[in-house]
Length: 295
Image (cartoon, rainbow, N blue to C red; front, side, top):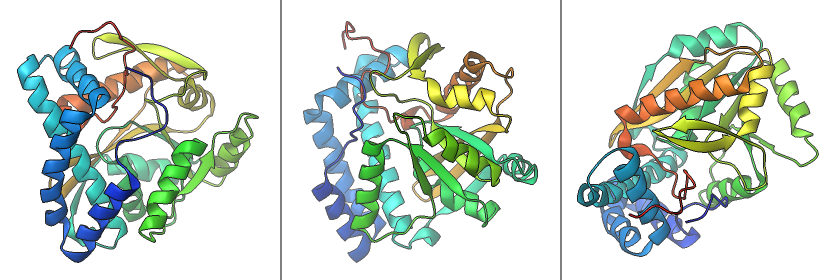
């Protein structure tokens, strides 16, 4: 098992096939194909299967037999979130319903005119968050902090379906010039979005207990969030049913300039959301760096 490399499940051809069915027949047809694709990944994606088995068996406490079934279900749910994302970008947003939990937190944040930092995780379907946020304030600009590898993958996917997103990307750079872009965005009352659960080898990390075992997290979101004097909130967009999404917003309550405390609050928050949606954990690599495990 390896650490995250910036690559996600799926191939360009696979995405194009799903896009074709979404366009020509509809979302349900893409869901139907997905059940077979998910089974393929269960059999042939060793890394994804092992990481899933570990998560469900060791971290969530399911039996090994039940964990294997959960891995398949997890593959299906993950695939559905991708299909939903494409369907929404293709103009089929009205097929889905949306529910807010904590909307007032975001409204209060924007009223402060300081900008704000949103920290999420690779759970649910955070990539459609812009549709929730534009519903709250159509003038709020979202900036997604990402790496060159991730940005290239996202851009390629959107270009494939000619989708135009209102999200601006701030690319993490070795010379740290992205910090100035972040400060400028915040001074314009814009929103800065991080995912706090993946890092590249060689970058600075912080450690915290997560689901009962020590894990490493990227230091950047928590160092910046704890030191910049702006509101910090945790945001998750979770799939309730095939056609219904639920956005959760929770304000982070942490000690000023204490990145470790902010990380602690974050891990507790992600644990809470996973207690409600255990099937929507989408990190398919050796997250806990436990290569000696036996699954």
